[in-house]
Image (cartoon, rainbow over all chains, first blue to last red):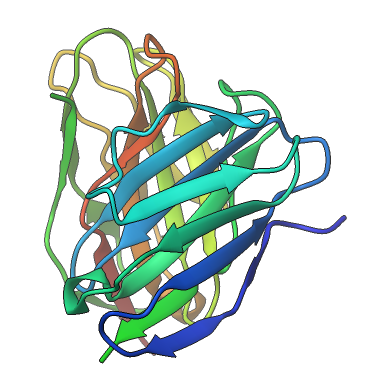
Length: 113
Length: 114
């Protein structure tokens, strides 16, 4: 079956622009997570969705970051007024239930010039 | 707060050598522990996991044992292959929390030479 997909795979933007990153979870998975991997660092948790609500947004680094999810499907991570420190690989993961194994997408590599 | 510490890489080995990648954790409660692997050009994949103390996770010849007394989850393989070259991430999830979010180590690059 289809895994987690993300788009675009690569995004280059100029400082100050807004970007939207998309995640399509595995069909039927209720839990969805966003993580960020900056160069030479481990993955950092950003936000967790259960259905279309986000009970844990504790990892969002600033109010420039926001995310939404439509039902138990697509999620969009939006970064406003991008900064160079936002350059990273943004990974999405989904799981059937919150306590289950998380399956990761291939990521979106964001480069802010 | 919860955290994971794993040995820095790169680790360079010859084919058929024994592999150990150390991982220790700090956590409250009873986390589950994971090893994820990222092969070149591919996404992150679950390699193995253990959900309680003394459990041993295993897959593809890799093993790791959940040691609560030493707060460790070291990854081992008896004989590595070139195809094992990848970045390995140790992670934990806080089963007592509401989100089950994963907390990762910084990753260890393994390079296996023929």
